[in-house]
Image 1 (cartoon, one colour):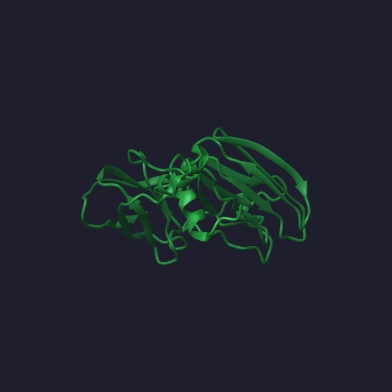
Image 2: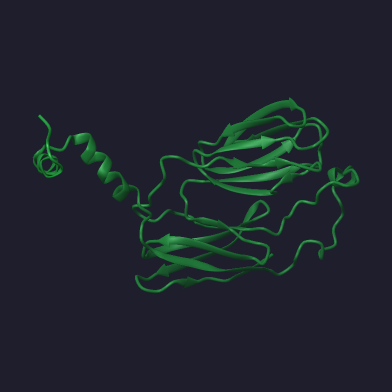
Length: 231
């Protein structure tokens, strides 16, 4: 029996919908980006690096010519406690901490718990990436240019990364339990989006420690402008 187009449409309207189809239809609504406001601002450095007189470390004295200088001016601005009902994606992106010109690039990498970080070697020498940090201990062993190894970070905390072969190489991986954070750009600006209304503690982390904290109230109808001045 051949059904006309109108008959097929009528049959589909009357047919029961499988439960699996109903579930899949609901997924976009469940996974949609939550509505919220934006917290943004600028972090100003009171004493930019390079202006403070200090004695160089042993590692810095051993730096070869042509190496990259780590950018220690970048800050991570984050909520110390995640907003209630914060939506965490099921699939987290992979991040990259490069080894280039005998330096880790970037010097600071902020990620969420569950993220896998790639450690590619773009130098003409071997590297051996490792960490003794409580949040994640690992040793990737020696590998040459063009190779990459990866580690998944499943615990929140600060992970200090080094190279066993080059003592002047170091970096930070800041592993956060939620997505309400942002890195400052070259001008010191940051932006955290989709923040539900509420009262939170906003922290500014730089070069190994929290440099500022502030309690802020996010209303229902206005974005927040939060500027900081830190050492």
